[in-house]
Amino acid sequence: MKVVSILYIIFSGISILFGLLALVGGGMIAAGGDMMGAGVGAVAAIMGVVVILSSVFSLIVGIIGVKNCAKPEKAQVCFVLGIILIVLAALSLISSFGSDGNVFSGLIGLVLPVLYTLGAYWNKQSAAAPAAPQAPSDDANRNGPEL
Image (cartoon, rainbow, N blue to C red; front, side, top):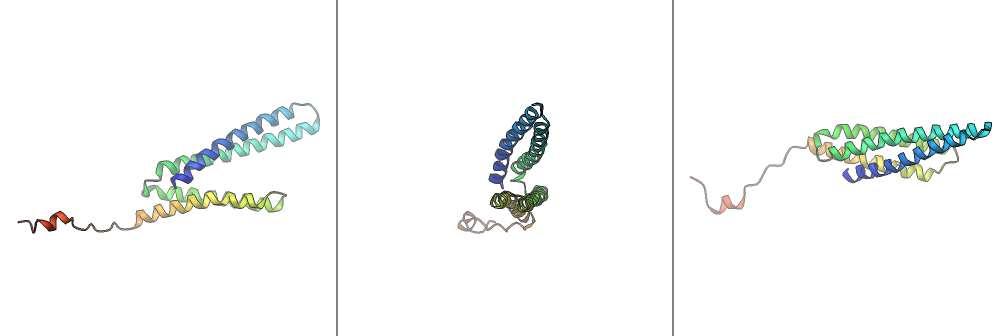
């Protein structure tokens, strides 16, 4: 789960930069003057905002995952966030069927959320599992019974 969370942080940072570029580029195109440029610029700016917002969410999920990966009692939060990520990735995949989008990239986009959720699930299971009893050490058996 820690590795996937770190990947989320890295990819989110890159996506935020691309979103900012789309936002600035869309504003520059919209300021170009003609009606077509204004429409294209507005769409690019809106897409930039959407990319930034979704990337900020992914960044928060990554940070929470890194922070809580060694805390099985916090695994439920990560599990719920993972389910939300899977739903968002599935919606993205479904939208790629309706457009000329690449379905393969949509399937790849499902891998990280599934791995994140699976890691959170395993973490949750380890918190629910009873601790294994400790075997007595060899030193206690070597010296004989204590009186």
